[in-house]
Image: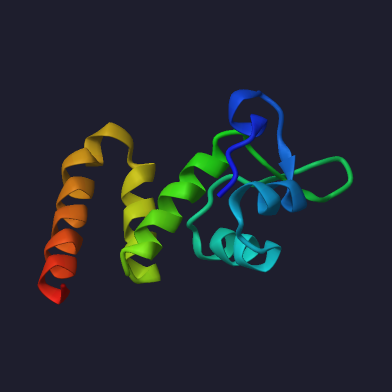
Length: 107
């Protein structure tokens, strides 16, 4: 995954730019948005999606979860907990620990 300047600026990125930065296809980005893995994708004056500067870092985390074999449902559960802010840190950690145990068992 490319880590370019979008993470260091305040600007937004088009879906094509975000795709290039993350390695995720535009259709995958739209799917992740539709199922709730990516929050708050605003539209520019032209009606096109504009991803926030922090989105690629979150997407990199999602890709890491996927690489470990976490099902999309688990990723969605984690994303929902993440929306809860600091109050859900313990639950997120527990979700990751359960997944880690499952991965270790499979290995």
